[in-house]
Image (cartoon, rainbow, N blue to C red; front, side, top):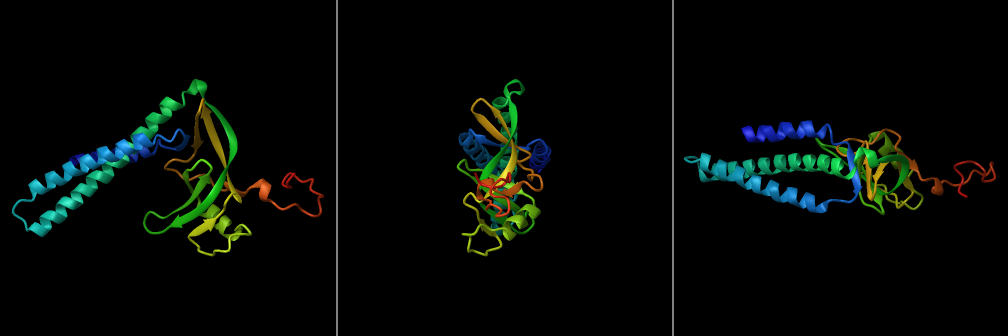
Length: 213
């Protein structure tokens, strides 16, 4: 239980510093390693629980073993992924080589989840990422669905490049990341209708900044 507490508290503290999402490179090999490490720690938690519950019924022993194994796996994965995200940021984005710029990310779809950990999310293209947005931005997308989006599922919004996200990017060499993201929610009013999808105003003869050229 002490180890579980340390992992949980450590994950909470580390999450305060994990406020970016790295787009390039994706470090999927590191994430897979975190899964492997977390799985091993989960097995250790389960083994310890199994040994500690001698004398109880087989059903309670099995349930306790599974519960402790899952607790160990989840807490270890969170701790490992937060730690590696922060370390990757230090390595890939040295202060002397990192530049910041404002940019638009094309959104492919948006969705929302419910329950205790409810969230509103967007997925980007052609570089895939999953970013949290505010509920206000999600409602904006719901009330301004693209003309071709005939679906009305409140939990799913099709964009296909109709919506964009105004974000702050940082670049260092070939590495690119989104600021104010990671385990955090992107700022309010991040989502807009992409400028190239805004229909021209008939009264301005196509001269307004939002009119397609």
